[in-house]
Length: 196
Image (spheres, rainbow, N blue to C red):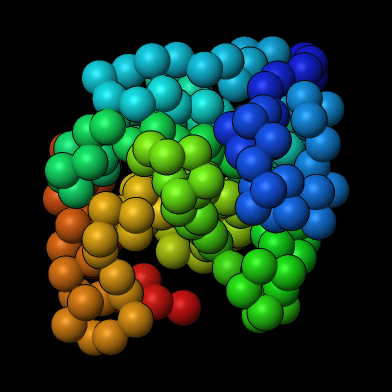
């Protein structure tokens, strides 16, 4: 697959302080990240707010239309159709660094969500996803990598829609919402526990 230039995450495009701090600390620069030509990251207006997609340091393996659809269905489930989203797929190392810088936890994780709405005066979320982790977890769990990556995107969107997973009851509600959205996206259920 050829590699070309794409768009920077929304926070970097708009020069938002929070986004600049986040993105720059893990090595992102305005419009300099790498993205596959087939997944140019071009902003596309959907049924709700804009959705930007970027692949930074990893090869794209899920079509933009599939990522966009996952965001749209999760937004609809969470009743946040107006939500604009920037989905940034990164390496495990980059996400662990972001986890340490932004949340004070240097461990690896699968997805981190930032609600930037206060910075722009409207509904905007930036979701960082480890594409490498999705590949590894999908292999261990014997599920399609597209399903695992979509799960991470859906999980991030649901967080900003008010779903939480810090307490057992909240986590169960989150898992039900994820399952509903993934079913709507056409993925088979994954019945094994998913809290690694």
